[in-house]
View 1: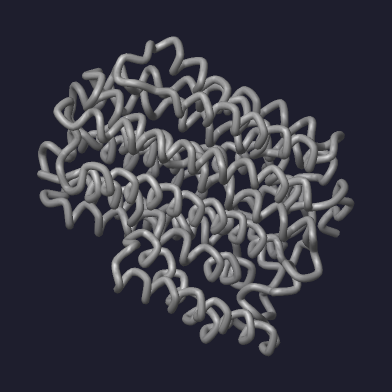
View 2: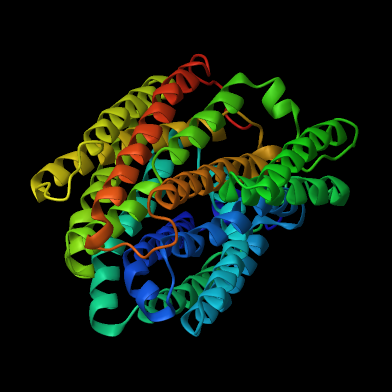
Length: 465
């Protein structure tokens, strides 16, 4: 730590800043999902183009997290957190001024860049600044902040959209981001740069970013010929990246973290599968509730907040438990519960009662809260301090990549059944068929995720010393 001993760090202020940052990032994404039908009406966007409002954000975030994580380890994690928040706020206000679908999608892509800068450093800062023995508790609190943001977003986003218009979501988030920036400037003066003597791997970063962009964009556009070509280019590029990283002195991503660290490798794989099987849920349910069942944005948001509320409550407990109980057991059990919730979702119909949906969302929220905090603790406890930024960024990449794949799966299924038409009660039958396919795919993914979670091995012992 460059600024002095740990006791000079005000951990309370630091935790508040990180939790606020963790709160508003997912708040934005979830609130925008609720506003999608209104955005579609105003900007004349169909379901597939609306999905790109989320996917453009995830595309830039997922591709840049790892390079930014390494850069944060070199130049300082506080700097990266501050610059990320600044970039995110500017992009947020650009979103609020969007007058075409293309402008909004582009602005969301820029938002994702700021998000990648923030997420690449925030968890690493928390891990470095707090003692190992309370790490699970702190991660649980931070994860709870994420889920409280997700909890508030559907309801508050629905109210804002219904009464002030969808642009008010971006205004609100932008103003909140300015407060986070002030907190960093005046409340967090310490700096963390354990890899400050390393050189940044520009060649590896360029190959990685290009390959990830090709893979994720190509996958989202399947099954077209160009999409297949881009997907193949992405896979070949990532294989080349692995070869390059094994030959450089200061790799942007140490391949040894995967090849020699079973816990790190399988915990990240579990995170990738989990987010691929769950992120698209809010997107498709928002369309279902508003366009098929005819609910207002506020009412739809009130229903959808059930899941993140349970996630927040459960994560705060499971994070604390992971200090004493093997994270593998907690995370695997959480994944199994999610499978049950997804199977319940397969039976949704146009006339399904709100009670059935709420019960299904409760099951999903409990499972996800049980999985997430222990899995994060497992990843971050498996590496040394020098690699904390990269570990945090890698986990964030698994999350964003999984979310991107989840949205791509949902968008492809909807497109197969209803094409480019806007979703309405007139095409409710084919839309409901697409929903059943989506949830079945998600359930199968999550089922295999149970075994990926169990495969990580026994409880970690690394204390980041």
